Length: 363
Image (cartoon, rainbow, N blue to C red):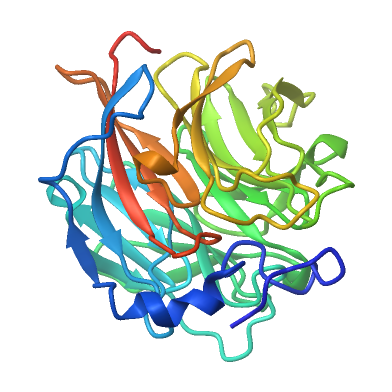
């Protein structure tokens, strides 16, 4: 198991998993189960408006044999979800309001992964097409690094390979089905890639100083979460603590990168609350970026269109190094918010899925 990264060895060690995990995994393994349900448990009194009724509905297992780290999520039309268990290399379908799941696919093992920062193969971002086809980013540090397609009833197929994979960490992924292209955030390469939906050669679509990691950060972590929204590609920069908007020009090229929010240190993935530009973002850790991420103080914050933000979920609500957020379409009682906690940095680790209610008025 890799050790906690330090500024001296940050480029060689894990960014996400195991900052204190190695020392605690033996103690927690006996208490963990593959999936335990808390659907009947009390809701949190800590959650802040416009969220309410926060409840952890499922716990997953992390030990030396089972590494169920829920990394990224995409919703199905029926309200169920598909998530990536990054270190298990699995894509699973979550059913019954989040309390059970089935495995859709397992990405092939890599005998000698050279994944930068992570040190092991990991399934990261996920996107869904209208016909049910799933696309996932697979980071290995080998030729298998890139985008893989998972068609219903078929094994995973690699459709795009990133060049120089030992210096690439494909993370957030989004599909623009109208223009038949995929966008990928490369956390280590510090660029946004654009790839044809059918597969092919990735092309650098956006780059520049705004996508580079913070020069004072303990880890070289730049672009992370990614969404296509209102004619633009939105990207989070983990160590700069920024939320960026990159307009898509008429010819498909990237426009000038705009900074829409700052002060979001250790921001991971995010989701829009509706058709407007309000965002719910997962902050995977709470300490300064000058030190490796540590502890269980991650949070979820609400970011306004003008860049202001406030904390709406914390560890007291059940978060454990949260990694991604999804928001369902509006229903009779508002929208449902899903927050995955990969528990990469927490002691003890508690990877889980939390559900909350979002007021309908928030757009």
